[in-house]
Amino acid sequence: MAKLLLLTGASGALGRWIAPALAERGYALRLSDISDFPDPLPENATFIRADLADTAAVAELVKDSSVVLHFGGISTERHWSDIIGANVVGTVNIFEAAKTQGQRVVFASSNHTIGFYPRGAMLDSTDPYRPDGYYALSKAWGELLGRMMYDKHGLESVHLRIGSAVPDPVETRHLSTWFSQPDIMRALIAAIEAPVTGHCVVWGVSANAERWWQNDDADRIGFVPQDHAEDHGPLAPETDPIARRFQGASFAAQDFTRGNLDDPA
Ligand code: NAI
Ligand code: 15L
Image 1: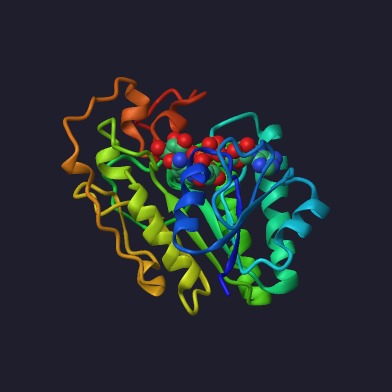
Image 2 (image 1 turned 90 degrees about the horizontal axis):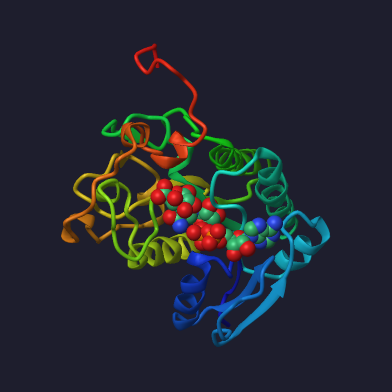
C-alpha cells in the first residue's frame, strides 16, 4: 500500500508543487494548511484545514500517517510574537504528535539558521548557528527539537536546511543558494525512503559550483543534488551593502542596527 504522507504548508509556494509531484510518484497525501489549498487536489490526496498552533488538531493530522513533511509556518522575518505560534508551538505540536506513533519528520529548515556568516565562508552543517532573525531562530529551534527527540526518544528527523527554493535562479546570491525543484524532490524522496536516518541535517542546495555549504548528512539518506545554478545566467547583482555581506542577505539586513561592521565577529 502507498505510504501516506502528511504535508503541512501544502497551500504555500513549495507545497503547491511538492504535493502534485509526490502524488505523481504514487504517494497518498494528507495535505494541510491554515489557508485552503488553491489548486485542484492531486490524486489520492485529502486536505484538512488546521492551525499548527492547535495541539489537538495537529495530533489528528499526524495520526496514522507514515512520514510527516513539515513545511508549514511563517516563512519570512516577522515580529517574534507572530513566529512563536506557527513555528515554535507548531513545530513542537508536530514532533509531540509524531512521538506517539514514531513517524519520521522531515523539517523544512532554512539557511537563515546560519545567515550571519559572511558570504563565501564555507560551512559544515555542524558549524555553530548564526541565526539572522526570529524566523531563523525558530528554524534552529526545530533542528534542535529534532536532536532532542532523537536522543531522548529515538524519533527520527531529517532537517533540510533549504537555501533558495525558486524555479530558476534570479540573483547573484542564488549562484550559491539555489535549490532546484528536481533536487528538492530528490532530497524529499531520499528523506522519506531512507531505511534509517537518525537525526540528520542536510543542506537543501543544488550542486552549484559556488555553493557555500558542504559536509552534511546527505550521504546517510543517499541524497545527491544534480542541478547547477551557474547554468542559468546572467544574474542581477544585489544592491544593499548589508545584504551583500551576509549569507542570509535581506533577512540579515532587515532591522540591522549594528553600527561598526569591523567589530569582532
Ligand atoms: P510559504 O509561506 O509560501 O508557505 C508556508 C505555508 O504555511 C503557507 O501556505 C501558510 O498558510 C502556512 N502556514 C503559516 N502559518 C500557519 C499556521 N499557523 N498553521 C498552518 N499553516 C500555516 O513558504 P514556502 O516558500 O512554501 O516554504 C515552505 C517551507 O520551507 C517554510 O517552512 C519555509 O520556512 C521553508 N523554507 C523555504 C525556502 C524557500 O526558498 N522557499 C527556503 C528555506 C526554508
Ligand atoms: C527562506 O528561508 C525563505 O523562506 C524564502 O522565502 C527565501 O527567502 C529563502 O530563505 C532564501 O534565503 O532565499
